[in-house]
Length: 271
Ligand code: DGL
Image (cartoon, rainbow, N blue to C red; front, side, top):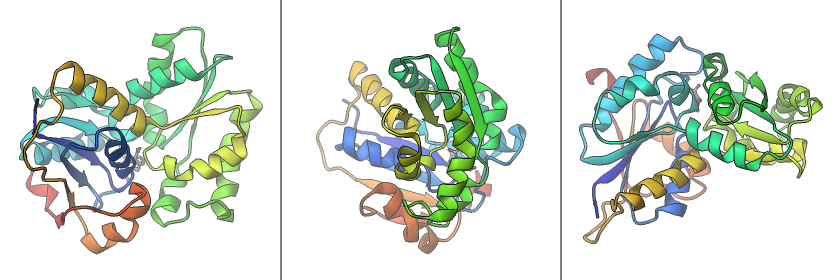
């Protein structure tokens, strides 16, 4: 048993979709979340900048007593994970490997679509991972740079015309190529599941990498006998690098529930 908390970070609010999965799959665990809301988005930046930001995020989280860290950001997981692993002995889990495993399990025709930020798609990490798992797969990738700003602006519900039009513009070419599985390779996109599902229909499996990462984490903690033991839980603690109020405005939608615990602003440049 290990009663230390699970650290989670993202460039902003998207990683809260992984916290929502933690609440569902590992409800007894304490969580320390950092959202770099002052520097979001990461997905339009260079690999070097993404690594610099992500290493500060990890250093901040490591100032807490943690048993592991979940990189709940598709961009950081694609671009910076191997270098982040060198920073600590505690396990750091990205979202790519778990999503790759789920997609390989889900596909029947071997044609997998991947959508994500420009940095994620440019990195080729999903393609590499999928082809390493099965060299016979056909991978069709598409950067969707305009989706994150729309989600951050609260425009993610079905019926939101501008978002529906954009998702159609981005995803139709993949559907024309007969994909039967689509990796939503950015932690903001699960909020668009309704819109993606409506467009893709029931025959395309949608993979949520944040959720799959938590499934993998549960396996890892239980194999290592590191699930949380008894004693009073501290619950969830949220840290952001910009306004707490702005975070609270949309956090509940990403969490699909109320924000439990404190929200505190920190200066990430100190780490
Ligand atoms: N959370 C990021 C990701 O999953 C998207 C937002 C950003 O560009 O920073 O890729």
